[in-house]
Image 1 (spheres, helix red, strand yellow):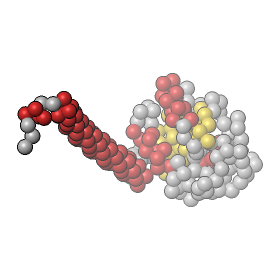
Image 2 (cartoon, one colour):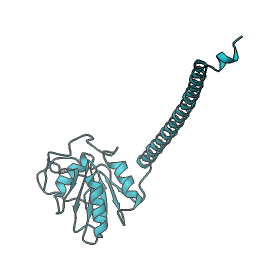
Image 3 (tube, one colour):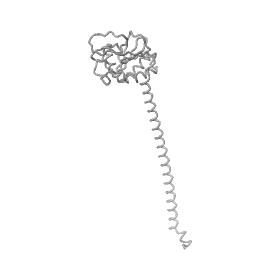
Image 4 (tube, helix red, strand yellow):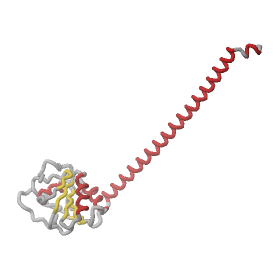
Length: 216
């Protein structure tokens, strides 16, 4: 049995102090592990929740685009059995702007091209054959709508825009065999028309070039 003298010796005191320091260090390590694990679990939970949200948002976007492609565009006009011959003479189209028919052998560049002056119908129709959407406007179109539609076209491959002074409505959208009049650039049908008809199922020559043609 240790004597009281040994228990109170400097060496014993140092051992006790060292043991207390070790005990505190172990306690700190345990707390640190708990905090680290808790933080990791919180981050993982956030990633899972965030990933689920992103996947859900992507799924909703895909569903919306599928619905836009499969649903008819309210108010659009359609033409079937349009001729597709290449000609080098002016064509008298039955609709204005034209949505199909015989056309020039060279297409109008339609890789998000915005033209501020009128372009030849015959070249534009060739662009529609390749799957482009053609946005047109006349002098009655509000400047803000023209600007907004130009920004959309500028960001959209297989689209083009130009003024058509003698068209009957201020703002019109055309694709091969399809045409729509809208009252403003914010009309929900604008987005649907682009989603449905840019390289859409109506395209006679999907994947054909929209660059390397006529640039005015």
